[in-house]
Amino acid sequence: MNDLYAWAAIAVITLAATTGDVLLAYSMKRVGHVGELWQSHGLLAVIGRVLSTPTFFLGVMAMGVAFYSLLFGLSWGNLSLVVPASASLTFVANAVAARIFLHERVGRRRWLAAVLVAAGVALMAV
Amino acid sequence: MTFRKYLVLAGITVFSTLGDSLLARGMKELGGASLHNVTGLLLAIFNPWVTLGILLLLAFFASYMSALSWADLTYVLPATSLGYVLVALIALVFFHEKISATRWLGIALIAAGVGFVAAGPSLTPARPLAAQTAHSDGKADVLSQEAEL
Image 1 (cartoon, each protein chain N blue to C red):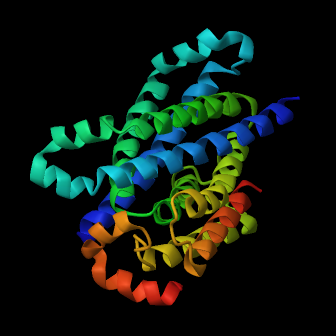
Image 2: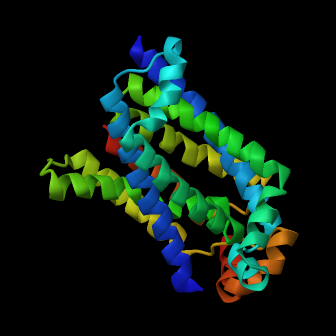
Image 3: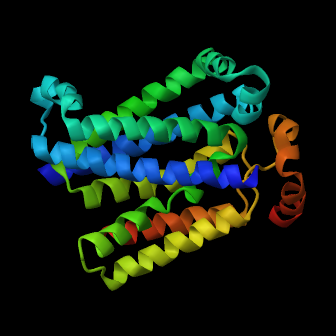
């Protein structure tokens, strides 16, 4: 029973984390280069610009869902199952989502990296 | 810029790894959470391990947001995945845990993936937004634009 709960948590974590990552990446691209903005306008301007981006809060909410699912998942399953399994799936899901929603150019190099890391993370859990 | 870039990526790796480990430790201390005990789960943030873990995850979040402002998501995620290797090496060195052949293979695959993506461009110049900031890594981007097409 706990196994089923753990895998349900893994599915929710993956979905929420991918949604959150895509929304946050989108928001930060709209904010612009944080380091340069900090130098030219100061830290407060950076914070103000991040906080005035609506998609940032949606992203944080999705990350909150992922975070609390992780807490639930960790109490049902082992750290060595829940963290690598959800992380591994999130790498692949993010590569697909970044290509579709963020129009990032996911070339052979990045596909290979995402798949290698996902496979490696999965192997670490065996 | 390049040194700072790798510093931020290293920060993401270390903060998220330590944060996750501390959270796990705190949650194990508290025992199993259940759907019937949501208040207990919300109160979990007052456990010292969980509090420290959350502080580290906040540091992770700040550096992660910074990285996403100048690099692609598909670059940042694989580039910061050495944390899994870090956990295994900490277990090997400090807790004298045995690392199985499968796990060594996993470590090798992750390291290869990180090397692959880190050697490439951090920002692909496909989007109009990216074009404005591409100058920071201009040379690598132009090269990769040809290589990745």
